[in-house]
Length: 454
Image 1 (cartoon, rainbow, N blue to C red):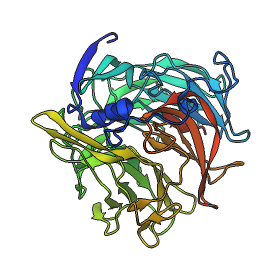
Image 2: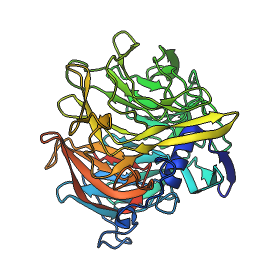
Image 3: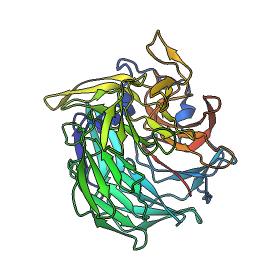
């Protein structure tokens, strides 16, 4: 369904309200409208490369596709980061612009599945977010060898704000999201690379979910946690487990906190190997409040443990990346609140973060990168740009092995900048615990996908 148009008040879906506020004015100390010091960070064309050129990436590169662009328009353009040259190169465009979509690497096939998302433009006027376009059912396959996208079969439901998880059997689990009629979905489906088709999962999730997390566990099952459940912005602490052996979903133990726009990170090494760190996000019932708490999913017991130590800042729409030594880097995000009453937005305030912190499973503590500011009662600035809704990718091999690429997002050169899509990128080096700039993307992007090519 292309060309449709529908209206959400900024209270309609909490995460969309946050995204709308970030795009409009940054949700940063709402009386502030100071522009960023340089517009170069927001430019759609900052490199000397010709946008019409198509380059084919290689294994170890990072494919960056879609997202919301500088004019609040979903992007079809894609590019990749070459860590050997530390440069961004344009590759073929997708068949549709996509923001709030999902991507999953196809194991053994040198391909990436990109599905769903919103295609069109978003405008904000008088506290209303209008989406002129449609939520997509369509999906693309990216071919590393040619650097081109081609359409594959469509999903059974239109989805944005959903999850896509590559399973041990090579299939991709698609779960939840918001459809083309303003419905939050409790359904899931599977993409089979062998047939190139989607099929429905036999059972539904225990809750409707959008902007939830999905984590592949060592058992082969997928933990699906939290999310927005309705158009009033209510969030849930419920979780589900998907079992690929039976193609069914069963309800699991609840989290301690209701959350959406949070992060979930599997520990693959260290004392918590096999467990999952759930951090930040926002939650409530009829309101959406910032959360600095974190909890651990214990895979052996199937229970959640709320940590006694909190993050040094509340964060939602942040990134979370397990480092090679088993610690977790949490970077950027929105530190604020969106409050709703009687179905209407009654307040939105806060700021986009330019700080980061690391969770160490050895002592179960969060430590600020660059130290903690007792005066500001939060982490010292450590990133080159304030960001929310960015992507973060760990390099497993090559020149930058162990380092983390962070790209785009809503933000600015400082916390008082307007929250517009960024084209900037930076690298976190765990050896020095510092961020450094690394070129610029060819397009400013937020809520894009970033996939490490296999």
